[in-house]
Image (tube, rainbow, N blue to C red; front, top):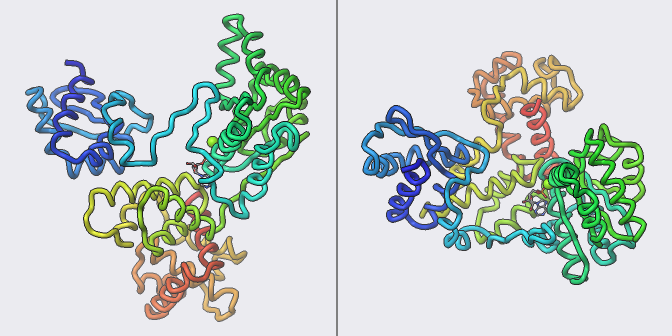
Length: 448
Ligand code: ADP
Ligand code: MG
């Protein structure tokens, strides 16, 4: 029996004893990666699943394995980030629909995934411009903004927006040929075509599109041959008034090793950036997404997530998914305490060691003060608040005791520390400015 067959047999066993939803949640993308000296190593896709399997399913998995192979004495779990496709897909297919949003399939012709639409794209000031430009392109491809160049940080909706534009164009103009491609895929196609002498065919194929969407073009940096071929395709399409839509992590002028002529091409159209979603929008996104997924979370929980995950919409979704997975198996309502503990390691990069010094530095820098200003006795208004924020962060993020905090800040009585922490805690979530400040300070401290 191969390792794969062995694991399939274990899954078949386990499947009989737990609900389909749980089965999919906890066993999707798991596999046996090795079996040596009686020890089976089971790979899991993330720490959440790993912990859960260790704590809840260890015995059951062990028993099933043991029945299949007597040599097994021990099992270990590890995290393997790359999707292990060892588990046959259809094994899980029937359950997927009841679990997540309906699984949408990427269209083979266009490479577009219909799950990305304008309808489920939340708009706020942070993405208003690219959204409006994209929407108008979808009404009038090739005529308004060409190329449309959208840039922004990771997980902020570039791919979603690009694909939504593509899907909308197909809806409005079913006869138009739309093609979406990541620049990695584009590069490997070009390289393969050059090798096999098919480059002209490939270029012709691209030249026949009405709308060409290339995602993450920063990855073309330094790939001169690919850039050259892209330049020709770009020009051919552009001259025929075909729409070109591009995304990148940075504006064209900030992408290193982009040939000058390509850069000036990119700069010839509309450049729109997606910045960071403000707190209010993050809450709106969470509300929309939890509604889509049919889960109900309290305002307090939604606020907690939005406050603590300020920079990445993908991570907001990750937090929701995690809570959703938990809600499925729990009968009691999800409280803020449970939510906090479930999200603990999503919110602060695990293993990040923080200390009082880092917190004080982060706070001082943020408010343009010197570290020692925070520690000295002063009733100046511009110092009182930052000092309270620092105390609050030491309490919240380091679980510092009140006497400890008091001592750190100029030997103050612990009641001063209690008062400061409570004051900030009361305002967080209510006072938007302060809330945003605190999440920015945390980014500074944890991403330094
Ligand atoms: P990027 O390509 O910029 O790294 P993605 O487009 O992949 O980011 O977005 C990450 C996740 O966040 C996706 O699941 C996407 O659907 C979701 N998302 C991003 N922006 C929005 C938005 N404005 N409204 C709703 N969902 C969004
Ligand atoms: Mg993307």
